[in-house]
Length: 215
Image (tube, rainbow, N blue to C red; front, side, top):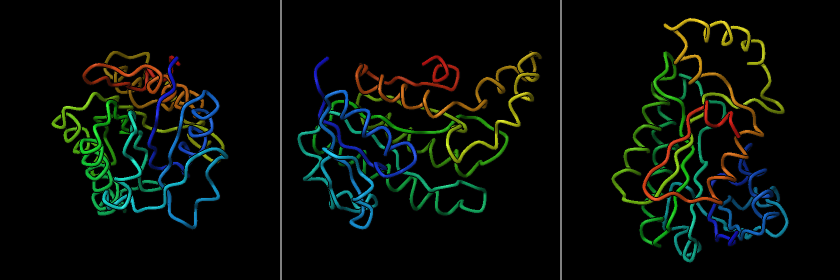
């Protein structure tokens, strides 16, 4: 495996902080965007890039030389009440990240999206869908990862819903949505992202929840 030069946004978040450590341990070179007050959350041997995820010009120079861009920025604890933030943060940060990735000639863009369609969280889904469309129009080789909910430390309440998903999978009318919207584990997400970085595609590749659970 050849090491990649990775630019990571969301590197101090729930998934990103763990992913950065994994990628570094695998021999990749990781530069992570962070606010100055959060730089201590990044792992050792991670290159710290202080900037603003909503302003690509604040980190474009630091992203130069990266062959892989992993974009994990998003509003924490999404809820229907945060519809405006999904546009102002989730979509805006994706717009800036894709713009920078094109400018610095990144070869592979990894985008954390969301399972779709779904009966709830329409504003959240629309913001992520718009990000996906920008990525399609960019011409970048890309991996889109679409979980609905990620189970892990501090994110365990949906375990009580797992029996309901299991029952829904038994019926043809609900089977597809149950498979698409059933939670994935943090470990499965990290392995999916790790695999995506190690094996860049030609064109666009999408991992839905059933594929994520296979890792």
